[in-house]
Amino acid sequence: MDANILVIAGDGVGPEVTAQGLKALKVLAKRERMRLALDEAPMGGAAYDLTGSPLPDATLAKARAATAILFGAVGGPKWEKLPFAVRPEAGLLKLRRALELYANLRPAKVFDAVADASTLKREVVAGTDIMVVRELTGGLYFGEPRGIRDEGGRRIGVNTMVYDDLEIERIVRMGFKIAAGRRKRLLSVEKANALEVSQLWREVATGLAGEYPDVALTHMYVDNAAMQLVRAPRQIDTLVTENLFGDILSDEAAMLTGSIGLLPSASLGERHALYEPIHGSAPDIAGRDLANPLATILSVGMMFRYTFGKPAVDERVHRAVTGVLERYRTADIMSAGKTQVGCAEMGDLLAAALEAQP
Ligand code: IPM
Ligand code: MG
Image 1 (tube, helix red, strand yellow):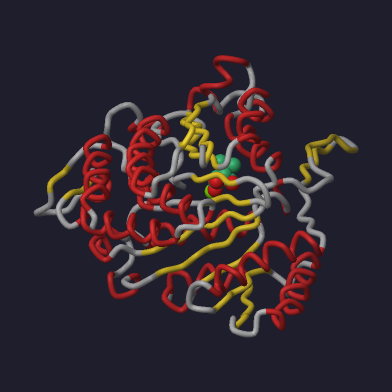
Image 2 (tube, rainbow, N blue to C red; image 1 turned 90 degrees about the vertical axis):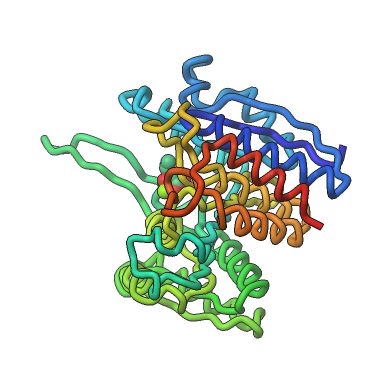
């Protein structure tokens, strides 16, 4: 076998969209003459219902053994009242940490055909093509001390934003490498005017710039970056930032594109990789064939680029998506004069478009 792919469909619309991603994956693998071994494993609420854990040991073991993971989504109202440690989201955070998936790549590219679907004006968002490189295994999400404690009759909640220089270095290097393959501009986002951890971030980033002379490094405070994203998004090419800032800014960047249903992601470490649409489990439309599978299919494209080293295949996926969007839309991006299709039909259209490519 050339690659061993683990499918973690998860909850909500996860199973529907990963099924469509798999259709595309199979077509592409065949064309590339790659033999894939496919396996599945439960996670999130579905896994909690089966085993009492959102990330069963057997799933983690399969994840460690996989060449890449195709991930759907986890979470839903059914599991919202569970203790934090067994909630579906806790399973996802544990998986990221266990596999050391420290670099989360979230491209926010505006497909011209759907630029009108954005809540922002077309002239502001058209042509936007941003890559958010979010640190994923450190910062406030994982820092110690953390918790809620009682002290002198008061309750105190604590989380800690902590990074060491090596953690900063590896994610900023990833930013430089990604930027080098794009428009050679790297924007490092932090809050160095208020936080020591951000001062260290800026120092480390600045120190690395000399090793990447063809990439122009600039810095921005996170509040300004949040503003510039909606004011003039085309000025930003590759943006590297810490975990929580990246969580927030990547959702903001997503809204530039019109629909979160179009946004893929890759979570990369030295040894493992996970590909995931960023829209989440969307329980309100789950099981109704309404979800947009394009984010998952674009995530499969990212798998070819980053795990299989075949960027041309990723570009083929983008061309197929652009072509299909000319006539067909899922409900989230429907507009007058187009034909509305469900999740499965959109998956079939994409698979057919990929098959038909010269
Ligand atoms: C994301 C999500 C997760 C995060 C949640 C579900 C814990 O918002 O992948 O962006 O905050 O990382
Ligand atoms: Mg988020």
